Length: 440
Ligand SMILES: Cc1ncc(COP(=O)(O)O)c(C=O)c1O
Image 1 (tube, rainbow, N blue to C red):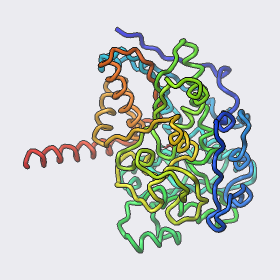
Image 2 (cartoon, helix red, strand yellow):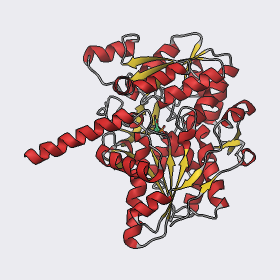
Image 3 (cartoon, rainbow, N blue to C red):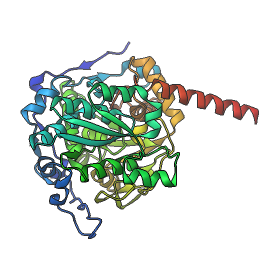
Image 4 (cartoon, rainbow, N blue to C red):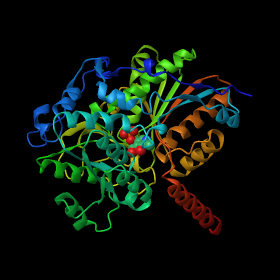
């Protein structure tokens, strides 16, 4: 029987700064472009929708950015999160690999998103902003921001992608219980929403459309700012608490990772988990860092690397990133948080430079991975996180075949307790496909 390990840190062992990977990158990042002038865009222009505290972080190249005491105090409600050895999964796969996962699902909203939500709510509140407007895919980000907003006395309004609004009513309720309000997107409330609805009245929505709606409301409002759940550098920065804790936890048990894995929607849980290991990757070729996405929205594996808008209606600055095109509306898969046409510029560049590899999997494989993990480890993963689990399973099976004792570490970005009907739906779809195949 394998050893079940659970590596917990004390609050005193928690990092007190966020880690800014830009200080260690062997290349300079391309600046965001102003869509009006097609020239590099400075932070001043964005101060209409973001607080200066966050814009300073966006452009900073300091390696360490201190976590304010007020945010640290809220982190302690659920942090440090444990690193757990998935010995049940190892036994099931009969692999010599040692598999660990960082459990971000234990946050109040059930995912890593709370790590940046608290920081963003704090910096906005400090500058007197009273209201935050945002987009949300599967509802994880919306619920995280509603939770954080309530901690810092702010009102939160979330434009939720229509397909998730319909399929995840419990997540919608959760946002409301945390004091936020939810509007299905595309909505008739905004010009952006009305434009999409005039072309496609039954549009399932997308993160790109929901971002347009939220940005439009924030730009036209005196007391509201916009908050983004992923993609931008300051969002990924706040998530680096995950990877920094993981590094300390691995060193306590004297393990060196061979393969690090996380899923990618806009790139925030991936960046937060992987960036603190990028200096190790630059030093050692043998460390594999893998970003996983759905086949249905294959931004990193099939997208083009170029400047593109962050939203469908072209209200945001242009970012140099892998993109499927800002008009791309992904099929309504159940990993709603991975339905984004672009990806973080830093994550994109790391893939472009070969420091990070990208993989894509099918919804059917993801369901199987989620079931195996649930049986073996007793945690029902979010469909998004199941992409990382699927990759960990594929690599652990390779280790079994080649008799390699690799150390595989993945980020469990969230739980799937609000996604049970999505799993039910995928299962029924698969069953129908099998029946149709048998009939042929
Ligand atoms: C549980 C979970 N994991 C991952 C993601 C993907 O987002 P990101 O790439 O920003 O981590 C989401 C997005 O909503 C999510 O809810």
